[in-house]
Image 1 (cartoon, rainbow, N blue to C red):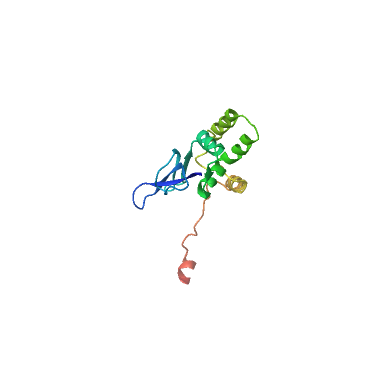
Image 2 (cartoon, helix red, strand yellow):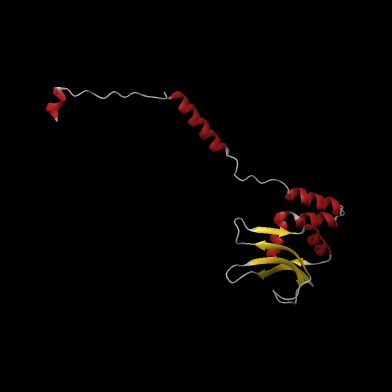
Length: 149
């Protein structure tokens, strides 16, 4: 039986993984059939790259993903597309959908939430109500003030 699983590569204490198709009887870092992607947990956020077309091909041939790889495939929508492929949808349409999903630009900074927008509006209103320069008059030294001190 074929498995889609992670194969550890990288130096000691610096793991990175390849997503591979391998026979279930071969060892973790042993003989493999094909490399279909990689996973780097050391980046922030962790980097996952899996060739959608090859993953769908091997899933259709009966390869079973491990728990970790199944999580990656599910988060990327590959397992949903595989289910639709089995129901008869065209492979080319599914691959085009996957390519479009990967090309969606991710904003570098998160847009402000409604609460943050409200706080900014309140601060702007307060700054408009307050005078820009206040003059504070200090009391002059008088003989009456010197006697108390």
